[in-house]
Image (tube, rainbow, N blue to C red; front, side, top):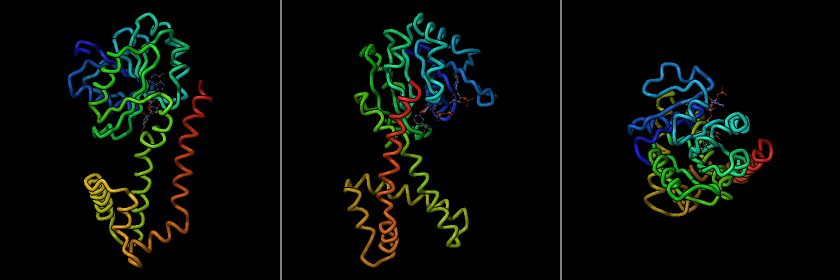
Length: 266
Ligand SMILES: NC(=O)c1ccc[n+]([C@@H]2O[C@H](COP(=O)([O-])OP(=O)(O)OC[C@H]3O[C@@H](n4cnc5c(N)ncnc54)[C@H](OP(=O)(O)O)[C@@H]3O)[C@@H](O)[C@H]2O)c1
């Protein structure tokens, strides 16, 4: 892939824009096509295409960042242009299997990549699976693009729904936990600023410690929780309410949803 290769992003929402800004910062020529014109109002440094067709015809690499429910419609409308141009299509859409893209566009060079929202701060981990007709150099292109927003790991497609439930959705689970610790701090009487700062630092410190110690997470829990101490009191409540079991159930629901998407929208 050379910098003369143009990249197009279809769907400039949370993820499309995170990837777009990272690429733009490195000097790539970028085309955008976004349905919701409010999202690209005042956008500078990007070429805004007037249709998906125009974008597909202008670039070598297309990144598809629309919602799963919009994917089939996109393929139905644009399959002939993709066939004619022979672009590399990189899709970050959750749940939709490679076979749907391959059904609409014979021999399409396809990469399915599952990043996460930490791409906005270049701390994503992106899992990449190659479609049937993707060439070795295409996976190199995928690695090069997504390494601009974090780490890239190549896997088999059948693992992608599991990865989606853990890593794709993962920041959402952590923000949920952060939000409830923050609300608890306010309830106890801390002001908003103190509470916000404290929660951020606790997560940052705990992540750094976990990464540097390399101990199993449950052992780290024990290191904080001395018997009959304060952490222990909170953990007792969590365990009695079966919070661990609820987390298992939640993540299982995310996994089942990723699998269901392939049934609903294919
Ligand atoms: N958000 C995450 O943390 C995350 C992580 C990993 C993967 N993903 C995947 O990334 C994809 C995008 O997620 P997101 O959170 O960025 O969604 P988003 O913020 O809703 O962005 C998608 C954008 O695409 C637009 N759009 C829909 N159909 C279009 C079309 N045919 N042409 C051009 N634009 C179109 C939508 O406009 P309208 O709103 O007007 O429809 C919306 O602005 C999803 O498939 C998701 O599974 C997301």
